Structures are given as C-alpha cells and as structure tokens.
Image (cartoon, rainbow, N blue to C red; front, side, top):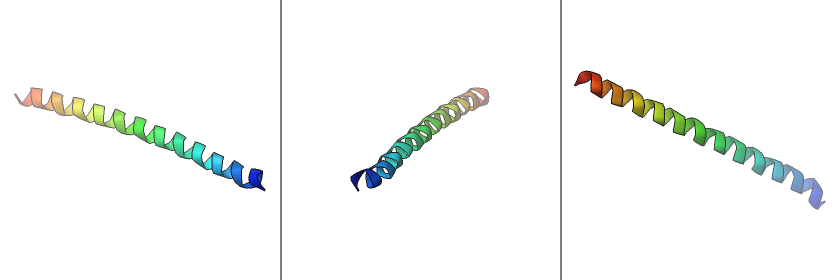
Length: 46
C-alpha cells in the first residue's frame, strides 16, 4: 500500500519543485528586464 500512495506523493513534490523553479526563473528574468528598461528610461529622461 505504501508504494501506491508514495508514487503520486513523490510525483507531486517533483512537479511542485519543477514549477517552483520555473516560476522563480521567469520572475527573476522578468525583474531583471524590467529593471534594465527602467534604468534606460531614466537615462533617456536625463
């Protein structure tokens, strides 16, 4: 019985880690791009 419940549980954790890592990567890249654009806009304004 432990194998029946253990596999979906491990699969869920794996999917959660993959999705979490992907979201962190996308968020980090998005923030970096946004900061770069804001710095460029400030330079243009000056």
